[in-house]
Amino acid sequence: MSTPEPDDSPDPSLTCDTCRACCCQLEVILMGDDDVPRHLTRQDRWGGEVMRRLDDGWCVALDRDTQLCTIYERRPGVCRDFLMGGVECAEERAHLDASGRVIHLLRGPL
Image 1 (cartoon, rainbow, N blue to C red):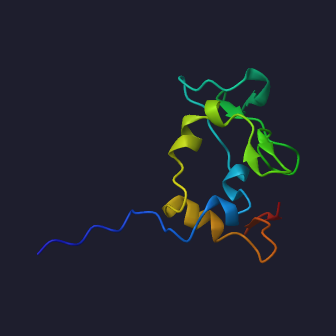
Image 2 (cartoon, one colour; image 1 turned 135 degrees about the vertical axis):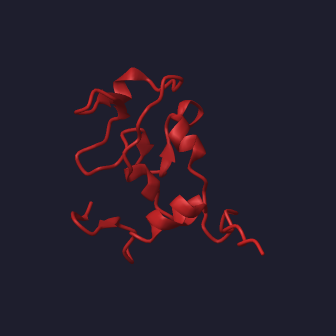
Image 3 (cartoon, helix red, strand yellow; image 1 turned 30 degrees about the horizontal axis):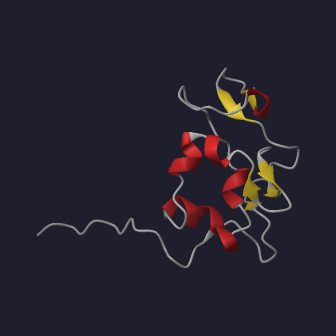
């Protein structure tokens, strides 16, 4: 008897309208075929190219008023692959407090 595969389908109750863009506080490593405007990137301490983040940890490409990506059509592949309502999305949402701020166990609120 085989073990059932875990359900990878997105949770329809998790939408971008209700998450307060928590994925926009993650480190985004750029790959060779990403076409992000250069002024929105920086080099990390290992020499890799990453999306720049503001002092409070938010991605520099996020419009803080609308919570929408300002470079959506040119967003990195990592962002394109981040499935709304998927496993990674649900894991990040688990770090939101009641006000929607991201809580990291070792660093506290961002």
